[in-house]
Length: 340
Ligand code: SF4
Image (cartoon, rainbow, N blue to C red; front, side, top):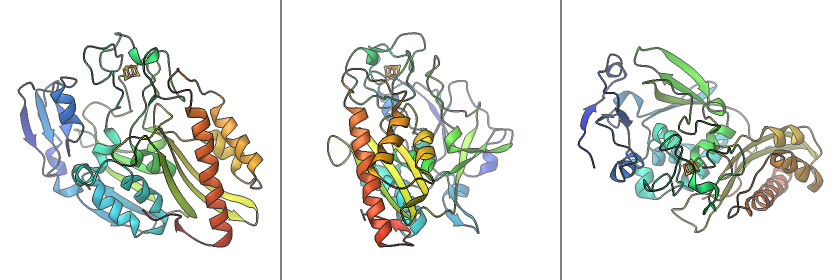
């Protein structure tokens, strides 16, 4: 690991006017960045340590939203969301991620900004446009079992690994961003991440020296909710496919559907086309197929990940069918379909 200095942030005002070096990196729980530094994928000369940022360690409830400080740990957020029926999707997603030890360290802001787990990104002997722009992409023609089928480009097919971000996307969360100048702006999670295009090293719309301060989650009804994660083993593994879903039905009509997909997109995937087909439709097996067909219309497979469209279709239909049965039997139910 290269030598680096550490500067601790305790309060939001410490960020404004901060003196940073060109290769400085923000660090919070360090559950991803430290690994990247050990492998020489990241070589910052300065770390701005946010883990002691006292102003952003709590969750507050307001009339129409929850405000989650960026330094709230994944464990604390999962526990809080577990007791709020409209956030049960978020709790399920968080509890499906990583391990207890990692969730105790990992923060809300850091989780959203974690890097891909593409094997070639972590191996500095391999070609990777995300790590080294213009060097190529070994994943395109080699082992790509964990890679994306939606939002891909000829320069990168890596997935975003966060379960929490998929749930935040589905729940229409917004991010409060603060710049070193002190300026703040609010950006929907659905608009935060970038598809790789020809610049896979640019992963989100954060501007120079902006930091995620908090996540705002609107209070909305999502009905019965379920986060199903399909992976190679049942713990401490990233999603091959995940489906975050909430469903409100009246009679047989879909009044509202809440959706997010993980493991299939180059960013946490918001399935706009599927939601459009489902909203207001009569629930049926056929309409589920039409919805997933619409979402998969532009999907592309790369060899080892050829199984993903079918796996996504089956997971999506199974989750929606379970939610439908549960919602029909429990009319005004709001909360988790299955407890973790
Ligand atoms: Fe790098 Fe993206 Fe290719 Fe993986 S898929 S090797 S992250 S460019």
